Image (tube, rainbow, N blue to C red):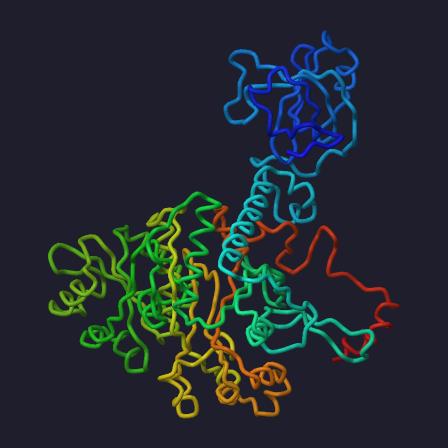
Length: 591
């Protein structure tokens, strides 16, 4: 540790090798104990804690000053390192074998009584933690999380730099372009009536960097999106952004796979030797009902529409006749009461109901609907699901999209409740070959599944104008334990194909040039084949820290209303500032 005027060592550094050494420490009074006139204080800084001792028989002046110390006062002490008495060591602390006998003390800062505990064992509610974030960040677990975040960033930079990537910053004030979420907009004082947008991602700029010949780019990019919040989403987040020229999807996937393995090894000491599982979008939806599957456990979904339509169960037959499917999951053995709990769970998620049957001895099923399934259909079900005695088959009959959504949530609930996976396990997978477009019933129009700059697969180009539903894109997502960590694609580097793809979503050539003209124009001068990914850095760090809440690894996050209770943002703006930016709030309110 680099020495300063205030300290020779940190509070997490001294050990038995330092016994007899004269030291200077500085930090916070974490806790104070008075044992028969001798005062013990746990002195805390970012690096740890050291027990310091004030003995009136050794130094009366420093002991007298210590009597007036309170929690979170900041002090500097000078003294000698000594061994703790026999039987008084603390194996939980790195400094647990030693203590410092104080010669001198200097009070550096007084403190009011903290409104939240500086203690990992006593966690305040979310709003208090965010309002007093400067106190919450003093907790050892929060410091540890920020250290882990820094270590992850350093490991990633090391990997990028070793593979010829160049760190290039892209603009924060950009042109508003449709990318899926709402833009945060910024008025221009010097260009009245004009607005910048804050970037949802550096997408267009990193493509232009490839056209510029940068070849391999990366950036820890700030991405800002005006969208509803949840545990793994914030209005501003950090993205490990990368782009590679002269690379296909396999090249990019191989690189990202190696990047994540390198980071896990460096940060957590975890070695992953196996290649990431690769699923097509269709396989993922068929097996897991979702495009970001948690593959730490089985319980795969099964489409049994063909069997269900041969039964006498009217609910299934009517649903199939109306264009729905029947899909099921084979759950672990449970009581009838537990089954009722999962029926309620599905109904709360939007299901009309949930049918079920339990596997009895041999090739037989039991439940109030089993009578509608003859011996042959019962055997078919048991064989297809490889169902074992005691297991419960749970059915959803609905439109394919709805059935997948409900069963995917049911599967996750079963996996959690039956503890079918290890929380410390890291299971990655790739999901690729996404549809380029999806139909928006509300807008009665085709919209991009990811973004409109993804290259259609060559064999699908002829369907662009004929049937967009058949167009698959060279798109690939990386998923870890059921959380999407990043999305990538091979980009369209042919202006004519780009215009055709934009025309599908209703953009005329003039509209395309108005919104994305600077990108289309750049490609006219030659753009190499290239692709890249935006990887959710906050999400990956959170998972490495053992949580799915990215607020635990961000220094100053927002609450669920996109507000910061600590600094009061967003806030009112001085009328003079509004006038200078040519904004009248009354006009905005009327609109």
